[in-house]
Each structure stands twice: as structure tokens, then as C-alpha cells.
Length: 532
Image 1 (cartoon, rainbow, N blue to C red):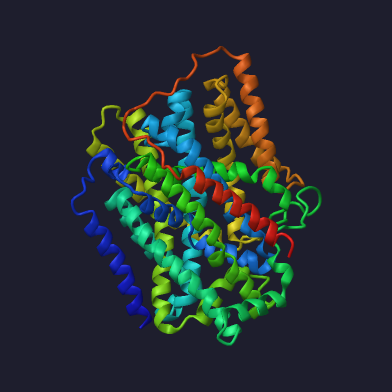
Image 2 (cartoon, helix red, strand yellow):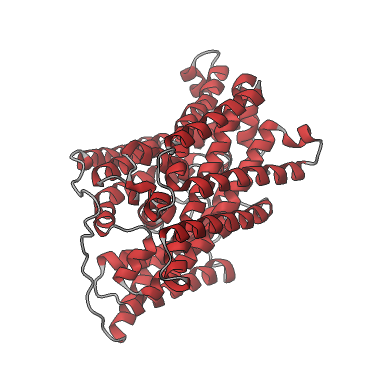
């Protein structure tokens, strides 16, 4: 029954997405890389949610909330604020320029070398951090629930290898043969599946704890460890112990929002859905709907960890990333397990294939066409994108098994590694929009300074600061360095944004109202859960 329900849902997703794409032109640049600029708000929101939420959240964040409490929720709810910024400020400007990639903006604003440097950093960040961790946490979850090693009579390590290989191959196939639109459709279906299946885990657990009453069950979980529900951390982000702190509250006012604005407003795998929107109205809808979903998502990726503490106590503190799989196996009936595993695989696939598609887009348009074959046809670029996806998938599959045993948990490891790339790129893009005096030379010097600063302070000298504080300091220093370099070096003509005339730029009439609602809910949430 488990295997049948797994096959039914997985098969339905593949069939539906393939059927929807039967008439699409996938051999053109816009058709393959941007879904023909035809994505609507609901499709964008579903795709954004699943591109972001994967098993590194389900496993890693629930593992962290089990051990450290609900403070990890900040990564999610502050995303709503960044999505407001994306909808009201960045989306109108991106769509006005008719962009396909983020590095393309950097060439328009600065020069070709800045575009190339950022394109290379993006590809390295995709392959070295996100893709392997997504594959590993996905394999860990599926192995724990599905028992691949027992089924095949092999060791657990070999079972994880086999799962990584299968999931990576299927994810690559989606990205290679279907392009962005295939990715977006599979994301949306799996997104709704994840919401349903993900909510069932805490609901069924609370029903069991509360003898049939969800609220009674929640009360018991709360009474068992009320301090776990407080979302304001008392940890210090400065001095001894700061490096091992999970998320001190003060980092919300230093580097956290810089990271969130980069991820939701500038990260290629996220913003590519906005580039593929049918118009500005639908792009803003998609971004703001995603903001609402991100406020609800902690019910799936934080609450189960708190329930796990009720069941397991401190017995799994040594290996918190096993909490969520164990909880799923405990509370889900057998006939639902197959559906849940299919949704888990969908969550892995969607983040994996979305990232592959974005990496292929960046390489094909920002490197191959610019340096290797300037007169490449659309068909040639699509072929190159497919080969890029295939090679990066093979590389990520090879690295994935080696990310195990992260000392502070897998989600924390992902964030620490992301800091190498995210903040330098964010500072250059923000300078490109907000500071017209920053030149191309200044941008390149700031980019290289940012890379070296984070690697030296956090990994080499191991300064006693939380890594998110280092992000904040780095961001400010990057901007100062860019301004000083731009002042000292020869001046360049000022950039003037041109309307490419690609899309209807009429905004959604409820965009500002919806944005105010998201900001208010985020503040109320912190006021309410910050006093537990």
C-alpha cells in the first residue's frame, strides 16, 4: 500500500506536468529558461514555496526546533518582509528591464566582468552548498521512513547513496527535458501536496497526544516545555559561545534581513519565477502569496520538532536530524506513508531541479553566449542548458553523501556556507540599484573583499561572533569599500534604467494592502510568541 500510494502521486505529478506542456515551445530561450513568460500568481507562489522548502527544512529545521526551540522560526517569518520588498521594489524594476538572469542586470549597471564573476559565484554556490545538502537530507528522510536499505538488504550508508542517485537522476530529468515551466508546474502540485501532508504530521500527532483533541494535545506539548515555544533567543551573538549559538535575537537587526532580501529579491533560482511572470500584477501576486505561506510554514517545519521533544525528550540531542523521520513513521498510518514519501521526494526534486535550471540558465546566457559562442542560436543555448544541468547534477550527486554529521545541524551548515556567496553578491546588487556613484571597478573590489572577509573572519580566524552578525558587518564594509574605490578610480557614465517593453507593468491594486497585512502579522507574531 505504501509503495502504491507513492507511485500514484509521483506518477500523477509527472503526467500532469507533461500534459500541461504538450503545446509549449521548449526549444526557444524564453520558452525553456523563462517558461515563455507565462507564469501566473498561483503558479509562481507554488513554485517559490517548493523551490525554497525542501527536506533540509523538514529535517534540519525540525531537528533544530526539537533541540533549540522555536527560535529558528525567524528564518521563515522574516521572509515575508523580504517578499514585500521584492514585490514592491525589485519586481517592477526587473520586469521593466526584461531580464532573464540577475547577472544580466549587473552587466547593464556595471560591466561584463562583474556579470561573469557573479555568474561563476552563483554556479559554485549552487553546486557546493545547496544541491548536495538538499539531496542528502532528502535521502536521509526517505531512508528513515521508507527503509530503502532494509528493502534492498544493504547498509544504511549504501541505502542513502542509492536514494541520492535515484532522486538526483529524476530531478535532473525534470530540469533537463522540461525547462522552467515543467519545474514550475511540478513545484505547484507538490507544493499543495506538501501543505496537506506536512500539516497532517503535527495534526495527527496532536490528536494522539490529546486523546482526539488537537488543542488538548497542543496544550500538553506546550506544558511539557513552554520555553521551547519562545521565538526570541536569549543567546549572545558576541563573545564566547557566539559561534555555536543558533539564532540570537539581535541578528534580526544586523545580517539576517540582508540575507533574506538577497534570497527573496536577488537569488536566481527564486527570482527566475518572477522573470517568467506573464505581467507585473501576477509577479506581485505570486511573491505576496508566498509571503503569506511562509508565515504558515512553521506549522510544518518547526511545530513537529517541538512535538518531537514531547515524545523523545533529550534522547536524540546527539542526532536531531533524525527526529522528523521518526515522528513521521510514528504518527502516519501506512496507507498515507507512500503519499508522504512522494511529497517528500517532490520537495527534494523541486528544489533540486529548480536550482539546476537556474544554474543552467546562468551558464548558458551569462557565460557560454558571452564568451564561448556569441552568435549561439536559441536552440544551441537550450542544448547547452541541458548539458549544464546534467553535468552539475552528476557533480552534486557525488558530493551529497559527504555533508553528513554537521555539528550544529544541516540547516545551520547550509546557512553558514551560504554566507560566503550571498552577502557579497547582495551588496553589489543593492549598490547597483541604490547607489549610482558606485562604479564597475568599485563593485568588483567590493565583491572580492566580501568573499575574503567572511572566509577569513569566520572560517580562518574563527572570530567570536555569530555568523549572521559577520554578514551585517561585511555588508556595511562592502558598501564602504565600493564607495571608496569608486571615488579613487576613474569615473564612469551614470546608469539609466531602460524600459524593454516586454511586459505589462501595471501593478496589482491590492499589492500595498497585502504587504501591510504581511508586515503587521509578522510583528504581531513576534510580540505574541516572544513573551512565552
